[in-house]
Amino acid sequence: MRVLNGLEGLRQVTAGAVVSVGNFDGLHRGHQRILRTARELATAQGAAMVVVTFEPHPLTVLRPAEAPPRLTPPQVKQPLIAAAGADDLVVLPPRPDVLGLSAQQFWDILRDQLHVAHLVEGASFRFGKGAAGSIATLRQFSAGSPVQLHVVDSVSVPLLDLHVAPVSSSLIRFLLSFGRVRDAAICLGRPYVIQGEVVEGMKRGRTLGVPTANLRCVEQMIPADAVYAGRCTVDGRSFPAAVNIGAAPTFDPQLRQIEAHLIGFDGDLYGRSIGVELLDWLRDQRKFSGAAALRAQLSLDITRAAAWEGRDASAPIASAQV
Image 1 (tube, rainbow, N blue to C red):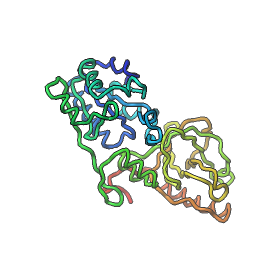
Image 2 (cartoon, one colour):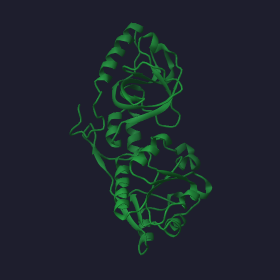
Image 3 (spheres, rainbow, N blue to C red):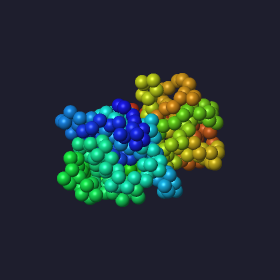
Image 4 (tube, rainbow, N blue to C red):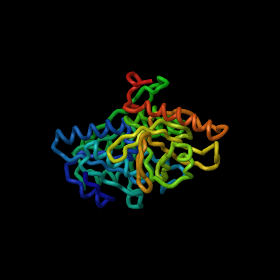
């Protein structure tokens, strides 16, 4: 996949392409349906499939206090877009020359400079300065033009509480904020991944016989404080993991951190960037009477986390293992 940057990169796209524009944060099942539709059209037409995204989210510049926490940092999102079959990824930064484009001006670029053949978007798509453009605007602009507009319906999934919900990035953030990582995985079509650099911690886990990798994550949403079952792949080998997010209430209730104990792993991860998949909520954090009680609980956590090996956290509820 070729990665192009800015409006200059956008203008390098080959004429006659199948294009989809959006932030695509999370690359969830709804986004996947959009990109799958675009890939099928591109294959049928013998055309390039082009994804145009914004990095970072425009609200980080326009109204930083309202910017949503990121689900997929660039190093996670780009491989997912490539795996969806994109030939080109155009990354638009939130610069004035991009944010200042009206809906009409952005459309003119797509139609007159890129000569887009097919435009594929979700029903809630907004574009242009102030998000003034909508699908209704696109229908009006594309009528009688060479650009064929394809509007893709949203995807709804049954969650673990049997509530059927339309998938969106906002819903996934809500679920993560309550520690509902398995529901988030159902919406994403894969487990939620925390990506970060392994840094030196307090090394208390090692003294308890449970060494942990301490992650520094600065670019994405961190789920609610809890202990989770997880999974981490190191050098091509997958390890189940018990993951603690939050403070260490038994020792230091003020220190918030992300610790992952990779079950069966023996090695040095300091300085490496790793991705930890979160598969299921195990328990809330709580303070124990001392090291012995904590060690006993950690043993139970590890046993429950290890039981997730080989299981699919993103399986629809009808076939999910409960």
